[in-house]
Length: 517
Image 1 (cartoon, rainbow, N blue to C red):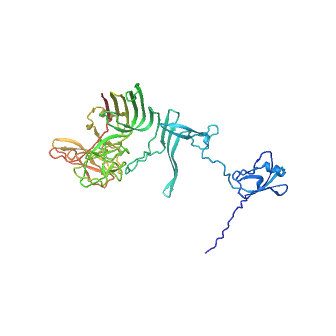
Image 2: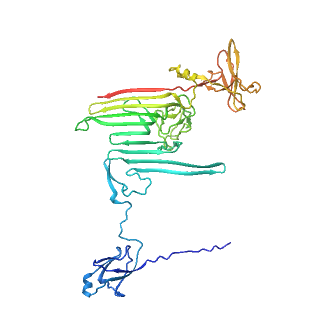
Image 3: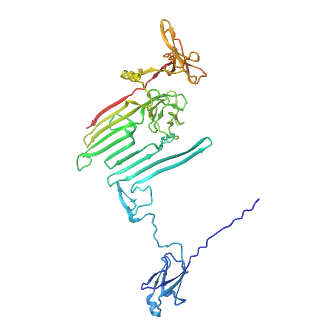
């Protein structure tokens, strides 16, 4: 047990002050710039002669006295110097304290509500490094350092910034920006979602708006052409009067909408076969039966027996966007006869997909007319994740609208290696027909030389039972191994084929015209 000596230090603060003040012609004499402690003031003249309190009025909060000249003259006291002894407070109690200078606030009109916006004086400037004038800003900046005994030192940073306000009396601006390289997908277990990957700038006033960046496109007026898309590009809307009238209900208005963007997702509609008593998870698949997809957050619509469900742990369902799985809450009883329909958008990144849309709408007290156009198409010459050879491009060009037949050979001639599952092509005879089949190659002697053209890396596609000639067999190899099965009486016995389905570029176009008189 040890004893640690402790030492304390303090600084004696002395508020006692003594001062000699030359008396001027003014009655008000400022003794100090701080407030004076009441009952601590002693005044004297003529070498210690104490000044009677009836000869002055003491204002301690202001730190001053006001001399009674008439009484001084009556008593015949004439002095040039006033000797003061007093104690002060650390502040001036009568001083006005402001968080912001009231001289540089000005009113602005936001719609029908008047408010006050603080603006730094342009002549004096400000100390805020993020000062943006009348723009209101919010967001966060984070910096992080990651280190450990199994990883190198790394520095992470992120920025999430939102701005809104007025650029001028007639133009408003709204900005949302982030520098996160990987957008954060929400878990999908709450009713409200916040998009961290949305980056856009919007200029608008009462009748016109211009958006550049990420935005949502929704269905226009009319019975047909229903859609909801997340896009990245530009959107322009304008509303103006074409038939003036003193009665606003009888005036004719025209609304114009035009936009061009890169579509973020691809639309899909899944009808899921329910399992009796199973709340999920139920896996979603793409339009081309893709099993591993990423659903765009907030784009889904889930229906149970035709009724729209609401997302949330305490509502009807939750969804895992990254795994593309929907799970229902115990509020609903899932039976085998339950109809489950899910409409959603998912990211496939097969082709660069562009989106062009526009519309014109006119309405007054007698008529309501609208014209809308929508076009979504894949760029044929810009595949993203799919690498196509020239032969495959020519093959896709010859298919026309028969995209269900876009199967190409899955065999790729490679050099032999033990690290991969490889096959060799052999000829076989079934009945009177001779065909080439792929056989799993395990003999290294047959594999020599390594440049032999008879060795292939083969990709297989699963089909319905009885439509293929290959089946998957158990194996200790580093990968899946498939075996050719002899057809029986011309009937296929397998559910795999040595072919791959090529994803074809697609185009969707629609024009609607409608009205009501």
